[in-house]
Amino acid sequence: MRIYITSVFVDDQDKALAFYTDVLGFVKKTDLPLGEARWLTVVSPEEPDGTELLLEPDGHPAVGPYKAALVEDGIPCTSFAVDDVHVEADRLKGLGVRFTQEPLEAGGVSMAVFDDTCGNLVQIASMQEAAEATV
Image 1 (spheres, rainbow, N blue to C red):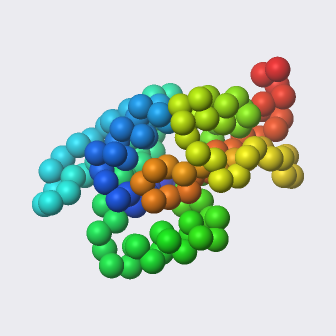
Image 2: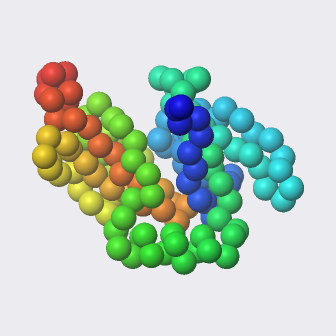
């Protein structure tokens, strides 16, 4: 068994697609009409056949309170691996991304949290050993 697709609830699929591709650097994999919404996925350019991220509309009544509670408590809805959190955070800040948690080190992992502009907090993380090996 392996993870094929995971999702993040977004308030606007077009806005989400622009953010996740133009800012974060993912690439669009699938874009199919599905009723009033779309089956819209992105993937890492490093793993085009890897796990897909579904940019799922947040129209279900349970999603709004769920997303609001996570944001209020500062809990990211998902986490992405990066080579170096500090470098990636600087790059994203340069593109106007708002961080709710600056990079910090905890137990061998560097992490930071930002607002994805679609109603979610997203974490980026790297193993400190991996980042130190590239220096």
